[in-house]
Image (tube, rainbow, N blue to C red; front, side, top):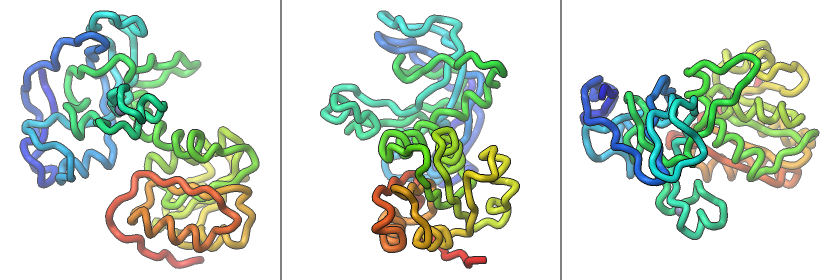
Length: 287
Ligand SMILES: [Zn+2]
């Protein structure tokens, strides 16, 4: 099959389209998907550059997110059938460890991601567990393959942050530090869906323009934008009504958590973090 692979880590120069052996035939509880679209995440850049625990056998098929058609099913798979249109959840858990048994699958001690630890979605075929796919919902306006492919990783991350962990409710306020990436934009939409108010920050003037965030959130009353670093000061002046949520911020988790606790406590009681990079935060100027 054709696939986009890394021949080594060290950057995008090591990517190439090539022929590789077909994804294996599905075993019990598995499916093989004929991929129709694969989506990019910042994770793909980390993997290409080389990250601890990432790809170490080459050629390595890249890509975490994807959507496609069920091409074949292993024994005992009842949830989907050949020909179904499905989107993939790239996080593979073992469903046996103590965290999985407690329902915390993303904390699995054997957690692996397509495209990072396992062959990815940028290939004609991918074999994955059946419980890692969902039928693409039938909507009045049908999702395109690209939209379905781009859904899973950022949406599941943001949903876990805001709904599962923070238990966000209508009327509460969320600080989203660093708007513009997939997790933070999805988090803003989820907050709006739940009837919460959002404050977003950005070091990029384009991201902080009111019309951009209004268009994305669909309402001019549900958010207030501010440059990075100013958001926490706004929190100090306002009643957040519960908690601050941070997503996709560029900085060490400890620094972000400390800054927000310093600025927002005691009004804010919950902080959720995801997708943190390893570079340091730069202080934006308040306008
Ligand atoms: Zn587990």
